[in-house]
Length: 142
Image 1 (spheres, rainbow, N blue to C red):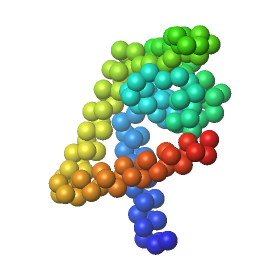
Image 2: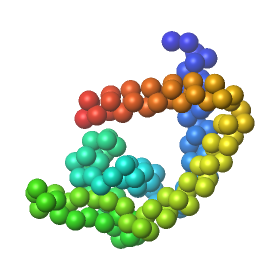
Image 3: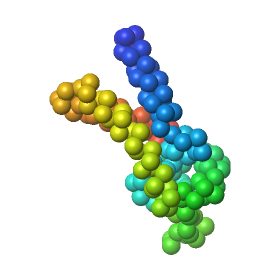
Image 4: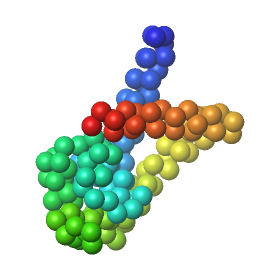
């Protein structure tokens, strides 16, 4: 593997984490943020969240309790199995993510200034390909 490619990928990861640190409020952890973002795609069972995020059930459970206490999520019993709780965002959770999204818009603005329209499309295509591959690998190994 090309060393320059590896270094560039690692530097991009570091920069994205640094940007993420700027927009995330101190009151939630990265894991909790990832849970909230995943729930923007719709309500989920804990087993789905655990699989998608690569979290153990115990780690997920602890984070769900904290998010529920902060009123960012709500959980209701599943109609199919009352032992399973369906987790969804509350209005407060959606408002928090909207505030965080303002910071993300800065990152998009920088990218739009750096990349041409064609480069933006190519970057999106390649990043989505990488994201999909990483997620599929994590889910497969779970």
